[in-house]
Length: 259
Ligand SMILES: [Zn+2]
Ligand SMILES: [Zn+2]
Image (cartoon, rainbow, N blue to C red; front, side):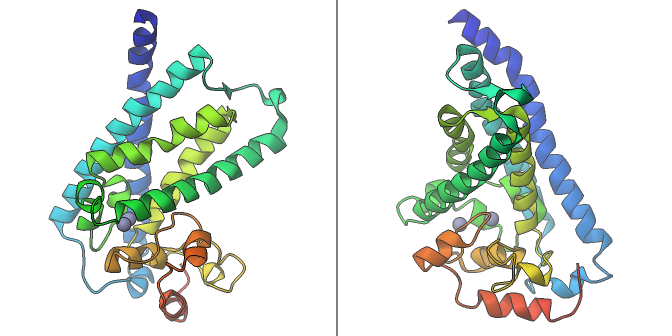
């Protein structure tokens, strides 16, 4: 038991630093990109008339740093799990080959999208909303800083996915790292407040199965539709996609401003 605790506390500072840095770097980079290209086009792709206040941004940053702390406390359990043999996180490329690495990463994203959709819908239930998810919706006009802006109970639910998934599916360390990068990148893009995706991501176009900034921003505007994270599949299947999504995305694409 003492050995397990020592392993946990030895590993935790590194995991915390990584989880925090991932958020800080991604949100800072996204905010900097939005600011840099604001005058040259992104201002015309802004999704709401309202603008986030300084108080909104402060709340989003503080809650996100708290969530990163919670994710690290939960994620460190994975490292103990690896040492104990409960979790297979391998580093040898020859162990399963590049195809497995890519497929396991793709599968992890599809599984995370399903987990997120159903947890998210459950948290919108009137009995659960206040405790779990109201905090995230304090961001009526989200900014990239809202990426991890969750209440403590919601951060625990969100942080449970990676440890749960890893107990079921062996992963290469690089695939897990790639998942972490894609997850935060898509998250800050969804909260950017201005449409970052080119027309190819619009409904009916070849990348239209992906979510866009308009898609998640409509969720914050209405609190009713567009529960998915990366893909539109679950919203389409369950009839929860915003009825005006296509029209609103096309209207922005039609400004002719390319991001
Ligand atoms: Zn959101
Ligand atoms: Zn929501």
